[in-house]
Length: 141
Image 1 (cartoon, rainbow, N blue to C red):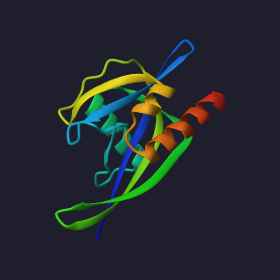
Image 2 (image 1 turned 135 degrees about the vertical axis):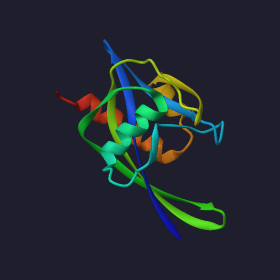
Image 3 (image 1 turned 90 degrees about the vertical axis):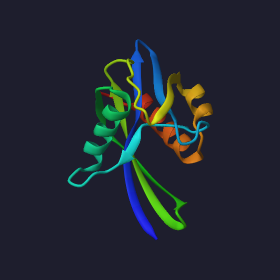
Image 4 (image 1 turned 60 degrees about the horizontal axis):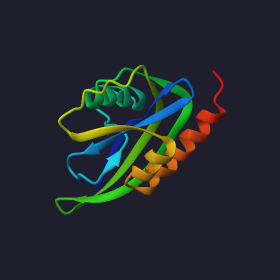
């Protein structure tokens, strides 16, 4: 059994009153829509990894919103070996919506909360998006 850890963020952009969330379509499974994330490299902490992954996958410059962090675990098989994966998600506000997509992805969308919730593939990221939305509704700068 192998353990891996990844970090990423629920990236949003707010213009006036409208808040939209960024979802990426993963090349490895064209039906998979999720948030930007990737492996934590040696010497990185989870926030550094999340910022790097967002920049590499989307080209976006973002600001991490303090006070929000959600972790979840899942497992999968890789060449017959069970892998336990931990994913650490933060909340990040994008400066703009100009995405430069990495080759790892087929596409991206910016969507309001309810539409983003419906497009996300797996249940845990859906739960985390609900928590992020609730956090942002109550957030005071």
